[in-house]
Length: 573
Image 1 (cartoon, one colour):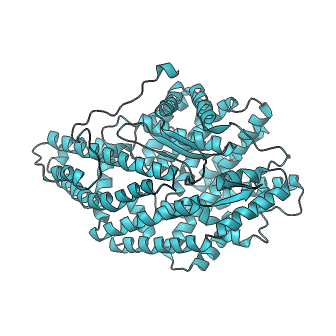
Image 2 (image 1 turned 90 degrees about the horizontal axis):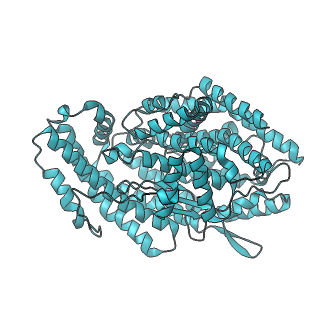
Image 3 (image 1 turned 30 degrees about the horizontal axis):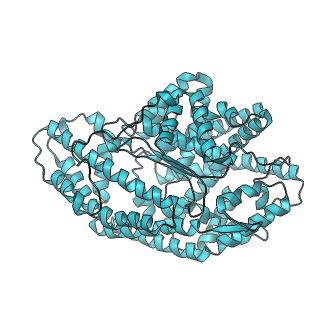
């Protein structure tokens, strides 16, 4: 397989200088001036203008992406932080007004009506919405907000605890909460939260600053609150806040009772008087934590094999990324928390970033981000960069479906059948377990941006939401502060506000996608690929329909999909 890989190279540029180095705004200003001032005398010239603008977008996005990736890999390197900060302070504020002018130029062109309206339908509705919400006075606020958002990663990356005389990262500490020694688990849990709560006030203050900035941006754009602004900014054309509330209610009604039954069974098996937060990750049969791989290299190689078995094209995507060194998978000191796939639209080969420590969770993260990567490969040949920027409801469908598709081949990670069964059972339970947390975070955000509140009231609201959507079996006595501050662990609240419910919608879609795959086999995978190849040239509903599933989060549909997962769990048990 390795011998067959053709490493992609960046396509020859037609508008941007081949050896452009972006170290000042003046190096790229003339490109924006060209686009703004160019005379357009025909539909063909308008389309070429759009392609040139798309090429510029791809070059700029990829340059910024590498700055972000490298900064996250080593948050202790001041030069890397400064390179990213330069982009936020010098490039983004200068491109924003031009982007607006170019959007206006596009929609006001008399030749626009001569273009293929179906081809550009989705793109144009987004452009018109961007014009509607653009305000010049928000540009410096965006710069400040983006700088502030990066402080979360810096604060989190500095967190570590000492165990047996060794300093370990928080992701590694989380893995120790699977230890079968309950006393040891309690010790680790308390150390983790003792360290986390040292930054409670700093994170509260940071969040207060971000809320104030975001609300000001919304007011400037003519919105009552940042929630309503973000629905417009995120291009949520296919659903409303009311639909989100219906999703919260459906999860509370149909999923929370199932999760409580899972947790009650765990508590009963553990036979402890109380079920504490450090009891939620340990194997209830006293088995050691699953260890599907050792180190980032083995994780890569086994993932390639797993994807190859599912469909050779999927394996080739990961192999290409490996060859191009577009993977940084292991947890290490100074590395920012989390995991992501970052698209690189010019070269067309994305980057996967993770904090792997050898856990089953890491396996799932890898195949999840691998699903995003496959999506990026499948949409790389679309003509406009904007066509490749899919909404999260679609992007997360790609990744979450891959988590489930890949399970058929997890035997590459687990030679022992009993361990393989454990891994699959854990995954199917977590498919449902994640939904209440997603609903909680989303419901929390709706409240945060539609109500004035203090940091203390925010914690009280979080506890109120947790009483409805959280784990009802855990005994938080003695750990009340950890419970009230649990939301601070969710990076999205700080760095990418309102980007979270998409995971819930896509999780439902992924369950339906997996059900389709089990029923249709290879045709199910064909449908999946056909949907992802569309990029963002169709509505979310149309893309889901191409995949052979529904974009639906009604209580009845949630119940139908939950019953399917329960049946699959029973088959494994």
